[in-house]
Every structure is written in structure tokens, then in C-alpha cells.
Image 1 (cartoon, rainbow, N blue to C red):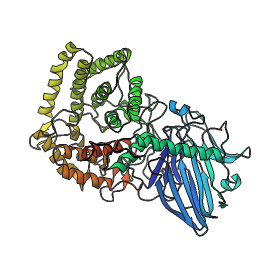
Image 2 (cartoon, rainbow, N blue to C red):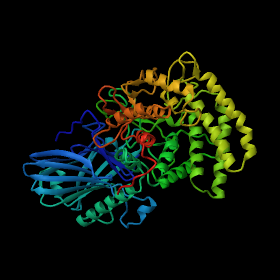
Image 3 (spheres, one colour):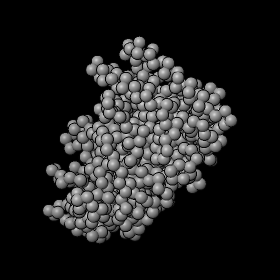
Image 4 (tube, helix red, strand yellow):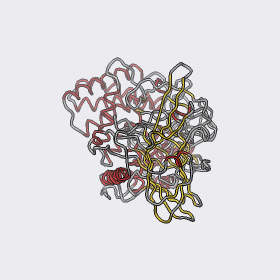
Length: 611
């Protein structure tokens, strides 16, 4: 079977908030972790075609001809046509549990379900089931287990002496011998494959799988019907919203940056990171967007996770956490995997968790301020929030004048990044607003001078008169796309001449054919060579807010044309080919897409809801 990858991310993602899977246009599962997003991979041919493992489906005397999502759902359908007939592969992850109740408590299974739906004729299919458990560190062996399912196991000992054991189970009403040996199977009726991390207590059958499909279909239709969107860009808003829903870890409410690890920002380079964690920085836009599209519960669950995760008084606030609130995210390189198109190293864990980034304080307090405006809190919860606010402001007061690593997590020398200073201002500004909401008027008055001091320092040190722009850090000529958010956070009026000029100069120096660099200056790994998708959306929003709405709409619609065939976006885009790069799909890219769509759609004063 040909498992060669295309030169673009022509993948669909299925998921249910527990984990996810990437499926290529030929119906091969090329990436999935079990049982959770941050578990070891079970399939990872996207990271190494020979060692990663995959689960493919091929057709004798035929091929895959089309792939698309069922309308308004996270269910992916691949159609095969050939000389002997037609069948479809319907891929999904159930969005509820067996009893139909626990799903409301955010307890869902990580099973991957593949329905082979017979359309016509008697087509022949082969199942290429080749799991490589735990990142393929050790050999995975598969055998028929108790006559009803295929069990795959891996056993090994790590260099540090830790023992590894992992297993998974494939349930099917196809001939298990033929599945195991990838022999042709004639389809005479609709049949199924169900891959589970667990040896299931209730063995699935055809009727159960059909029920799971129909109920999952209904779940997505109902969820989509509650999603607010505009006539303009309705389809793109909804696909992005469904993607975000799939990337929210259902047991805790944490929102992952992406479901994958080590997909490179540029082919052949070393900018390959593990994004299966939650960055607090993504939270501000997450909360705002989720409220605006009619899903306050998702926003509240994220906020509640943040409140349970962040420290209270004497513990340093991290920029990122594990999806259960883990603080230690030790980075490791998997040298046995070659990487996507040879782009190594493959990394798990992320060493950026211990970086000092001052923007996080403003992000967090902006999130808390939004939440307090959106819902009523108990006195007890207000006490906890107020304690955190005061603790964070003490830290800001002590550190805002110090250098840090910045929003882009530079692994080299710390600098006085302008955006970090802006977010320190945001922290004090939101703290003052929260204090007023809680009746702490005297405290608020005490910190107004600090807010004004930070603001003045940025205007003096962050503005480059020769460039007529705010710069990346104090005393340099380099520009940075993050400064496009200065008006968004209220630091400066969008029609202020300095902001208008910053947008103009950023467009001139950082934009290439409508796509944005984060920055152009060299960092730890050299000069960036790909466009950062979220920055391109930031430019759209900045153009719109500075009165250039026609140009903003043109840029936005150009960006929409670069979506992959399923409407999904990675972290980066190649300037020349427009192929997607970086981890995929990227939550921040889809959040920014929705934000821009709501800004630009002229009819957004009247929401349309379509089942």
C-alpha cells in the first residue's frame, strides 16, 4: 500500500475532546494518541512512514475519490469507487458514553470508529492495521485475541530502567484473520472497525456502532445549531468552532494549542515542538470568541480549569500547563523517529514551560475580567479570584521593568519585549477594573500610577521615531507582529496615529503577498522562513480596525482560500506554495479566523442559526 504523504496537510481531524486522529485523503489514519491527547502515539506515520504506524483502508481495482465532513459535524467521510462497486468510510469518535448520560459530565471514550458503508456492488477492501504503540519505541505485536478482536501490545525497557507496556484492541465484524493479514475482503453489507485503548466491558456489535454513529451525528447537529455565526463566512466559522470543540480536553476544560507534536514550522528545520498542552496566552481570545459564538459553557469550563490550575500566592505562574494542570512538561527528543518529511528532531514535552514571559500576567487578568463580566460568581469564588489578582499584580509590580523571553518563547537571551510590557499594562488595567467591580476602590486608586508609569515607559522606549513604529523590543529597529494586538487589548486607540503607522510599517516590512512573518530578525534557529497564520489574521483585524476594511476583507478572503480541503489550518503557511506547516490543526489559527470573520461580516448584527 502506498502510504506516501502529499506535499500539503490534506488531512481531516476527528475527535471528541478526549483525543483526536488525523486521516489523510486516502482514508489512512496517520496520527493518533491513546487514550488521551498527550498519551503516546498509536499511529504516527506522519512523523515516520516506516516506524510510526498507520491504519489504512484501500480498495481493490479502485481508489478514494472524495473526502469531506458530513455537514455541520465532526464526522469524516471518504468515498471509494472502483470496477466492482462503491463504498464509503465513515470515521468518527463518539461524543457520548454507553449509558447516554455520562457524556454530560464530559466523560467520553477515546475509541476510533470506522464504518465501511456499502453503497453499490460488491467492492473489495483491504485493511492495513499497523499500530506502533508508545511512539513506536519498541516493537508492537498484533494477534487475534479470544476470537473476537485483534490485540496489539508493546513491551520494553527505557534507558532509565522504566518498563513500558501498552496495548489496544480492534473490534470488527470483518474476518479478523483477513484484517490482520491485510487480505482482500468483499463487502456485501455495511461493516465496522472499532479501535479501543480498553478491553471493552460491553462488546460492540453492528447495532451498537450504528447507534453510536446516529447519536454522534445528532450531537454535532445540535451543537452546531447552537453556534452563532453570520451569513457571511458561516461555513468557515462553524468548521473552526467544531475544530475548537474537538480540541477542548473534555475531562478538564483545557484547550489544546493543537492535537499533534513536532510537525515542523519549516520543512527540514528544527522548529518542531509539542503543542499538546494548554497555553494560558490563548485563553483571552478563547473566552471572548466562545462567548460571541454562543458557547459560554466551553468558556466557563476553560476559566474554571485555569482557576484550579494557576497558583495562589507563592508559586510562580507558568505560561503553559498540561491538560490536567501538570506543571512539569519535560522535553524529550525521540531520535528513532525521522520526523515529518525528515524534519527532526521529534519532540515530546515542551521546555518552554519554565520560561519567564511577562505577557502571561495581562493575558490571565484579561481572562478573569471577561469572565466576571459574563457570569455571576459566588462570594467564595470572588474571594479566590481577588487573591489571585492581588498576587499577580505584586509580581507585575516587581518584574515589569525586567527583560523576558517574549510571546514567541525565544530560547536565547532575554530582552525588553514591547508586547510583554504592553501586557503588563493590561494586567494592571484589568486588575483596576476588577477592583472596581468588587468594590475595592481604594486598592484600584493605589495602582493607577503604576498603570500610567508602564504606559508612559512603553510610549518612550517602545516607539522608534525613525521607523515610525513600535518595535519588537526596546532600542531596536526590528518589528514584531504581536504589536498588532496593542489596540485589541486597549493599550492604544486603533485610530491613534502611532498605531496606524505601526500597522502600516508592519505591513510593509513583515508582510509578503498577504502573509505575515512573526518577525524578520534572526532568532535561536536563524531567520524565520514561513508565515505565521495567526499573525496574518491579526493583520486583517488591525487593518479593519484602522479603517482599511476593504483591504482587510480582501486579505481575509485570500487567507480563507488557503484552508486545506477540509477547511482546516496549521500553525504556518509556506510563503511560496501556501502549503500548511506546523502543528495541525492549530487552535489559535481557528480562533483568529472566527474573530476576523465576526469583525468583517457586515451582517453580524443579525445572527443566523442553521441546523
